[in-house]
Image (cartoon, rainbow, N blue to C red; front, side):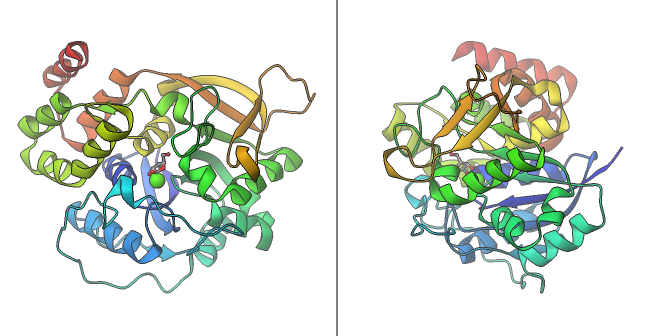
Length: 326
Ligand code: BDR
Ligand code: CA
């Protein structure tokens, strides 16, 4: 059965790979993409998403502009991670075209108002927080909300304790979790505990190119600076591709396992953006989140290779060999 989905994101290298996976998954009807400032400024997010949609042969997916900065804190982008253009310094040619005339907020209200629509959030949750403030009933109509962001027991990637998306707009993330705690709603947190396991290694990237030269070359182009960043910052030969795991989880809930817990996000100070996950129920509060703690990297890459690269079942076994060799 097809499910209608809005992807709210800040492309972004791994956002782009997540969009590729969604577009090649027939269970997903991508109603539109809403953008928020995050990895790069809003204009670069728009330019990047156009390039991805053009590459995928899907230029007509509505793309709506959202927040150009966090709710309260000054905007800090992640260009050192995602390259000067936010797409790995790939320097792909610009794709002409204007954004949808609707703002991200209007689009979210319109689509969610129809019912039966889910949201996969891959960037700072500024648009969603604004939706809560402006039209809580629209937010409450979200069928399923999956967010790449946060961290439970894994260390941070922008501070010792915080993950970038929640750190970038801590007030937005905090508002989303607080609202869900009050409304009885629910979010699935695909945080660093699980995404750190999804490492695109040089051998997996080479396998991509062997199996599908067109898609493999595109992914090599956009991940260039990502490999460099991970080497410099984590001494990792490869790159962590966070966002596609949120889409993969949406497609296959067996992709990750976790716990149900009341969860809140710290807004400021030294803990800015940190997730407080009440695993032991000290606060006696109803769970507002499913916090994912474990995943299966081979299962993820099998899905990604099958869908995005069109790999055959026989070819998929090569993934295990690549993973074992690491
Ligand atoms: C998240 O932050 C961004 O750099 C990525 O696109 C991902 O959404 C990982 O912390
Ligand atoms: Ca992102």
